[in-house]
View: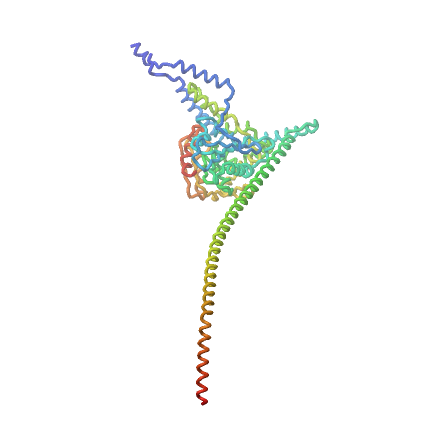
Length: 350
Length: 182
């Protein structure tokens, strides 16, 4: 009877447990890990921005890919290490990748506006990528706010954009994940960041980090996840890279911050067709290239409803919209991003 | 004790913490979703900005008195280097345009030379044909001159016989008249 009862008591794997706590101790005491990027070379530099070229492991496609990431976070999330890199995934699938890292602005960059980012940085970067690759056309991939920027840019430029891929992209800023009253206050002008932007010049990364933290103030699940899977060395490595990126926010130029909140969040000018960039009205109807938008089902930062309107705004005949399983950040870290993008791009990149 | 069943002591804790996190965030969301909080946020942001503004002004004033550069001065120097960078970019693009126009010019020249070569070849072929024709004509002319000469020789041969015939005809007419008179 006693023996039978003892047989039903589950056993704690001591080896696994000691490894678990050893790893947790390591995470707590060791410095943050270095991020090893996919093989790359610098094509062009302007101010804090850098255009990287990541050659394909075995080139299969003539049309290179140009990656644009959000201005709100650091871009290395798209190339955060083998196995979870968007850039690495695309180069493995035979694409030459050009990746524009916006960099983190300093005090002297306080006057950089969205107009500058789009026309002076992005357009010049795409020009250089086209020149460097010798390709006649290029595919643009924009992720998060980078998608909004890529869409605005494609609607304005005369450069040959063959395909446009937007992942988890905010187009309609009248809806969001923040409480309704906050959104209301922002739209009515009760909450205004103009003075703060002006006095800081450049919004420090600490404030940006605080803003993101404010979206979900209680966040213990990453630590619980780490502890419960700390015996898995690969998971710990990925966790540490992700943890480094989460806490390593980018600063934001004051002028661009004002523009972002006033023109996009407050007045929703992009959706209304009233946004002007470089003195020209942004009309997404000017997008005629092949067009692919995808959202993720568990996205807690950009809602599907924010992306959907863009499908009716562009003039492209070849357009696709899909929802994949995943979260906003896990889309990049799980390596799925490159799979989804490749599935659509492969037949359009010859 | 059984070795088949391994007990994960953190599984339950993980589930509870996830639930707890979601509930707490939800509660904070609800607590802050009101106009009072929005106004508080607005006042807080504004007063922070005002405080920072005053701090910056005093900082500038102190730096001016102490004759030391401020962040603004350093930013102005950095802006100069950015201007240089922009000028280099513009120059680079101009070099590209020049390269492109030179390339198109040289490809244009090559095409022109190729055209010239084909035209010269055609001229050569045509001149060879014309030369051939001229030679044929020359041969025909020489043949014609031969014929002419032969004709002239024939003419010469025919002329004495004709004069003889004419002489005989004159003698016969002379005899007849004498007979008529007598």
